[in-house]
Image (cartoon, rainbow, N blue to C red; front, side, top):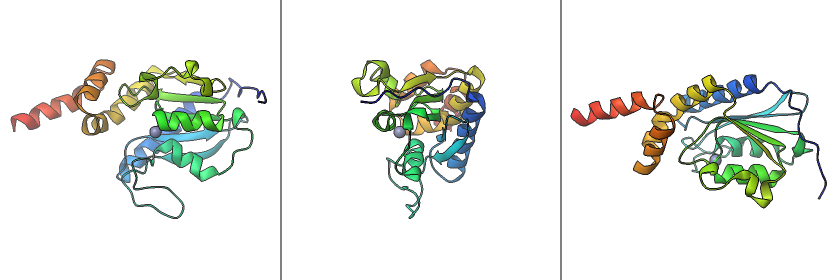
Length: 193
Ligand SMILES: [Zn+2]
């Protein structure tokens, strides 16, 4: 196993997380789930952008129309074989699930940064990345900016309500009470109507 230096800490984390959130909005507009991702090299340049495509048709260029068509997989499939993955940083609008977290570790990403925790579907609910033997090389940075964290939570809240079972929504309500409040109130109104 070769030791790879970690990506520099001086990357524009905030700008890249904003770009991931922008991709998440693009995904919603296209009929998919609100999750976006960007991959950044050690020169602080975006080398790939991706977004969730679960709700869309498959094309020759992109995996789509399948429940595994997550934003991070979109990024990885777009790039093919990665050179120096240990120097890359993956930014996502939402904490990666087990599949995408596993793929990031398998590919040897230097760092993964996300805007917002996923209290139900995020891999952190099930495993601590730092404890997983295959994930030792990947540094994890969760929710570094409270305002972007809240923005990501508000963006994903309707999808969390729709897609996650009762227990999952309860976890989301507990983790992000203010950001899920509107969705909860809309639900209550519909129940009454
Ligand atoms: Zn995923």
